Image 1 (cartoon, helix red, strand yellow):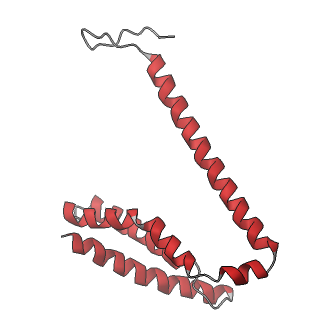
Image 2 (tube, rainbow, N blue to C red):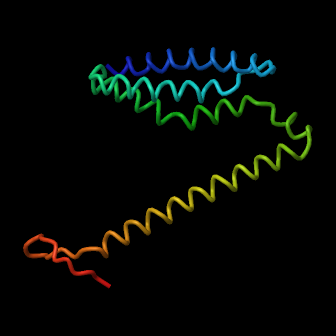
Image 3 (cartoon, helix red, strand yellow):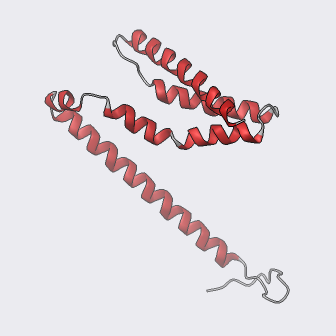
Length: 142
């Protein structure tokens, strides 16, 4: 059932929060460090492990897939809890870091999109398919 996917997410979330708090304590800060990210990594690993061994029915996988798609909104909601005003008062470093991260992400997405379009265009030019027989003719198109 789909509820099992939610139960798996809950277990991964609790373990991720615990490990995030533990990591924060180890590096000397009094906050959770990457708990949601750790939880999502645990969810991915658990799904792959269970899927390889045939332990995950399709309905459970649907629940896990749903929560995997909810990753971005969950991170945005958690970021909304952060004290942005205090970060901005701390100096321009926070603003510069945010702008740098935004520029890096936008550049990476643009690069991936261009590489994908180039790969699809090259594949279309490599071989022509005869419309009547459906067989490759081996003739490159211009």
